[in-house]
Length: 118
Image 1 (tube, one colour):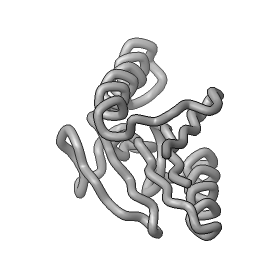
Image 2 (cartoon, helix red, strand yellow):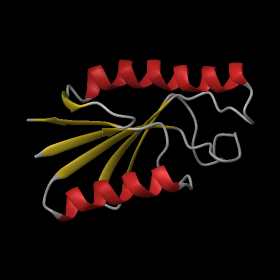
Image 3 (cartoon, rainbow, N blue to C red):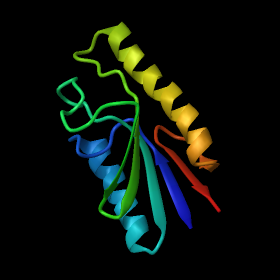
Image 4 (cartoon, rainbow, N blue to C red):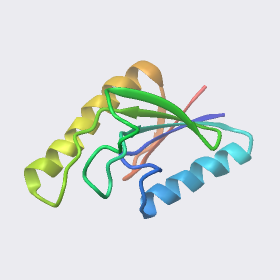
């Protein structure tokens, strides 16, 4: 089976959600499934896109997981408007890219969106 995980934050960023989703993706791969993660360009916790990343689209392999990174506006601090802009740039860029690249069938909605396709 092919799984897709949609999340704004994924390694190399640090944090609990990033670790949990990386572990989840690795568990699917070890069970013989393929996994694609659709995520933003890494910027947490500095609030700046990491130097080795950037642009509108980037593809990479991390521990046998296909990772597709989309445009994200990095927000520093907790100010409302920059944080909202960060969330919505990811929403729009991942929705556009996800609908073109992944063609997933959504099976559940939560804070993290898990998808699969045949």
